[in-house]
Image (cartoon, rainbow, N blue to C red; front, side):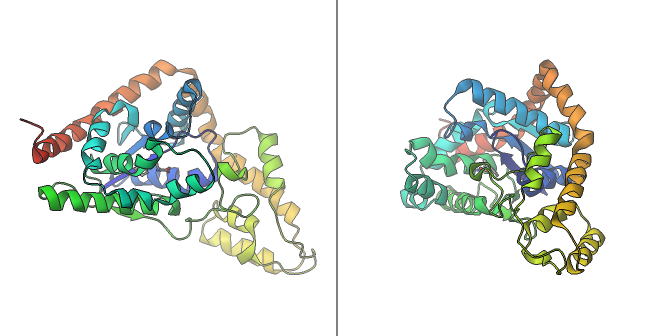
Length: 321
Ligand code: TRP
C-alpha cells in the first residue's frame, strides 16, 4: 500500500507530533511504500522569516532521520524540492469550488481569531491535495485536525476524475482512535500553540520541568485514583504496552499512589526512550552536506513518481499541446 503524510517544520518536536504522526510513519516503512515529507511550502502560510523557516526545515529533516526514517527504504523529501507539486496545485485549483475552501476549518478558525488571511492560507487544502494526488497515495495517516483536509482532497480528486476521466487515486485518511488526542500538560490537545507540549529533544532539566507540571486532580494520596480521566496516565500510556498499562492501572486504583512519584518515573521513561536518537540527531545537525545529499536523493526518487502523475494530468487537461 502507498502511504503518505507530511509534517510541518514548526519548531521543537513534541510527544504529540511523535506519537500521532512520526512514529506511525516510521513503523509503516517496514511493510509499505512510504512517502514522507517536510511541508515547507505550507509553512509559508504562517512563517514569515526566511532564516527561521530554513532552520526549522533543516531541523525537522534531522529529527525525522534521527528518529528512524530511512531515506533508502522510503521516499523522504522536502516539499519545496518537488516543483511538480505547485504545478499540480494550479491545475487542481480549477476543479476546486470556492465553497469547499470557504468551509475549511483551519481557514475559518484563523480568520475568526483575526489572523490576517492571505491567499496561501485559503488555498492551503489545494496544495495539500496536490501533495497527496501527485503520488497516487492510498492511505494518509494524520491527526484528527487534518481529517477535513483529506476529505477535501477526496472531493477534489473525485471532481477531477469526473471532469477529465479516471486519473487520481482517491485517498483515505487514517486516524487511529487511541492516539487521536494526545493531551498536553494541561489536558488540552498537545499543541505548540497552546504552550502545553513536552518536547522530545529538550534538555533533561527542561523535560523534568514540563513533566512535573502535568496537571493532575486533587484526589488525596490515600484514595484510589481514576486512570481514565488522568492526563498523566494518558501521557505515560504512550510509552506502555498492554501489560504496562494494566500494571499502571492497578497502581492507580490502589490507595497510596503519589502523582509526584509517577511523574518522576515518567521523566526517566521519556528520557531513556529518546536516548538512542539524540546522538544521531546531533550528528545530522552538524553534517549539513550529508543531509543535503540525502535530501537530493529523496527528491529525485519522489520526482520519479511525481513526473509520471503530472504528465498524465497535463495530458488529461490538454496542456501538452
Ligand atoms: N496540513 C498538514 C498538517 O498541518 C501537513 C500536510 C501537508 C500533509 N500536506 C500533507 C499531511 C499531505 C498529509 C498529507 O499537519
